[in-house]
Amino acid sequence: DLHVRRPFDPSDLLLYAVTDSRMNQKWGRSISDSVEGAIQGGATIIQLREKEIGTNDFLEAAKTCQQICRHHGVPFLINDRIDIALACDADGIHIGQSDMPARVARTLLGPDKVIGVSCKTPQQAEKAWIDGADYIGCGGVYPTNTKENNITVGLDGLTSVCFASKLPVVAIGGIGISNAQNVLELAVPNLKGVAVVSAVFDRECISSETQKLKRVILDSVGAV
Ligand code: TZP
Ligand code: MG
Picture: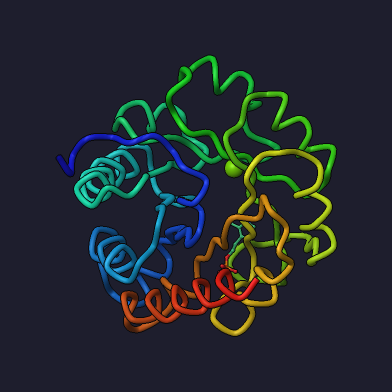
């Protein structure tokens, strides 16, 4: 049954697509069309990241995306908003260092939901591990225009975050077709994939861009 939730697997982090409504507006498409496109192109997990809409619109978008993702058997996470994740029965959340601590989020969400935490340092990674997170998002690896005032950690910072815990790590920030291989050929065992916004959503055809990126990722992972 396609609609049954399956447990989170670290390999789900391989091609992690993070939505951005500004890019959907720019290209004149709906959130559901863009999420469908990313999944058709081979995205392995979707995060709904909405920084500029009200709670009700966020919830409606979340319910729609959750249905699409569950239909395709792709895990669906909500950025920041535990209340919205619970309300739409998302598979989990992704939180940053200034959001609620993962330990508290775990108490609210229970053992079965996925919790991802953004980390830039080994100390933050260790804390995420102790707090009961399921994975770490590490970045910005490269400079990006998608997130303002985001300090980059580079490949060295990414490597030290990976070494700080046993949690699976997904790299984010300025990653796309041209440099995904540089990230993945670090060949650190718990580095499980790349997370992208503009490389898939700020493109004319989301599904074909996602597909091209997936090819690069699979070739890079296969080569190490
Ligand atoms: N967190 C760290 S960098 C970033 C986030 C959400 C934005 C990544 O966007 P892009 O377009 O893939 O560089
Ligand atoms: Mg946040």
